[in-house]
Length: 259
Length: 265
Image (cartoon, rainbow over all chains, first blue to last red; front, side, top):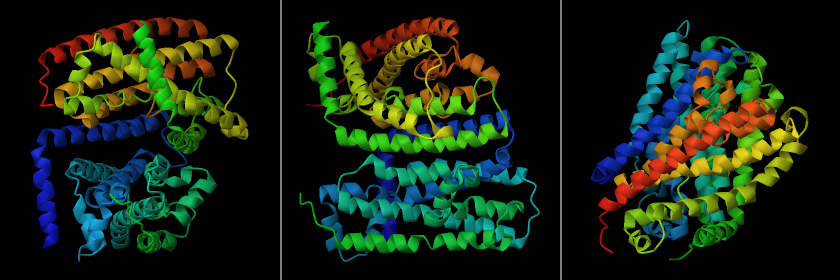
């Protein structure tokens, strides 16, 4: 399979720069440890925020770390897509007889994200074992759906960013707000934010579908009807559909920058 | 001295050209500021902290965002690339101390980047309604001390950046080097979380470490969390740290230069 060859090639090339790879992994881990410590210290000082305690917040952190790092590892090509547009490299992608998404997925595989994914899983497990949950089959399914939904939503945001860059060509830092902002917002159960902000990130960008809503379902709290919280992750996954359409539409408008 | 002034002016003018970048930076800073204000408001509504009310927190965040370019540790432009591709050898032949040259370059860039960004954020901060709005400084004295604190912060931030330059010499990885230094500075310097929100015991240690001088201290003086007399004492400690970190940086980079092997050319 072609993808397997892509992965092998990226693995080989990252191991050519072993030290660099480890150095970058270590310092990304350092940042994450700093962030986890920050959340811990905040809860040491305040005990709870809007009714949520440390382990509930930690679970949210675990979800977003796992999900975001996984998407970054495999879909990094979409993150780097603006560079393809700027350099005109995208032309070469378009003339190959392979699906464009297949090629973008293959263009980058970031192995430095593996420690972050593992850390995300570890803190999810720590949080889950410390939360008093009456586990049912439904709750397990919702939890799994939460992670899948998160990956779909974040991937959708990557697609949007890539699509927009076809029009703007220049890579504006400002565009990253949506992706990075969504990520930071998802560190805590998002109902702690102002109502209007929480609404935008429920109905327009469905962060709540892998954050506050399934958390309410698992903890059996909150004012939203339980069945709605339960299906929220499934609903959130649909976000990727308009994003894919937007990306395809943008691609039709692509004008090469030349070389 | 004259040549350093020349370098400073050149980098300053160069940075002023990037206006679209500054505009995009301002929009980003406003968004982050708002996000953080809502987050910490939620925390401060669940419990209070002495000497750090919601309105003080809001001012702390807005000022922090306004002077973000100053507080964020970055390497002087091009230096990382020069070290990795070997062009750094052209710097060796110049009759100027290389540490001083890079230090002044970086300060010039940071100074210009800050000047382009801070005013709109301050103005918007003042104009925002009620519990989102930036307050005036607690006193005239505090305001002037705040300004001095910012200058100390700028010098300190860049003294740390020079340590990243040293690491780049050693590792040839610009991204990794600046990443490690800024992760440590951000963690202990109030960029991940406003330091007044940390447990008191931790704060008592952190306020004597060099990281807090980058922006935490001036912001605290502005909002009245630290009094003028305490502020002056702490800033004196900060100056000692600054001299020490610059001295360490000079020593390390001086040592690295002796062993530098330029890769081709």
